[in-house]
Picture 1 (tube, rainbow, N blue to C red):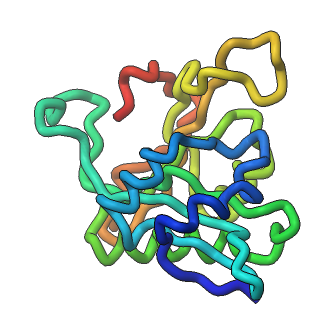
Picture 2: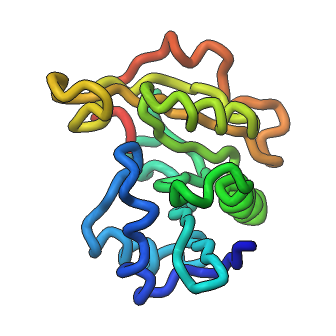
Length: 190
């Protein structure tokens, strides 16, 4: 059984089991610590009975800078999943779902309009997982990733920007059903 708790800085040395997956983004140490400093309650880990980190989620609550308020790409107050991953031996146990639901609940508590995330177009298992939780494709971000997870001859890979409306978005104004038809450049997302 997993124990869920807030991330602590000494957990940095325990994330490698989760980050070995080629579809999991691995960041510089300062990036993890920035999330810990700015959004500590939205950086959660799951650990096994031996104290090993077997999953984690990094999230935040934000909106686009006010200078972009009149841009078609402006994002109102929302929750964002920066990273969620589960170690291979702990998958299919509901850990990823519980971590994601915790961040969704924090988004609702923070009065966010929606929760979003970016996922590689080739990560079919993750896309199916998110769709089963009510997420849908809002847009395609062309060449979002600077590498390609399945084709080493490619220099980049597109991402899906997937969203799920939260309680505040009663009219479902911040999602769309034809997201695969809406393409944007990486410079259009914040």
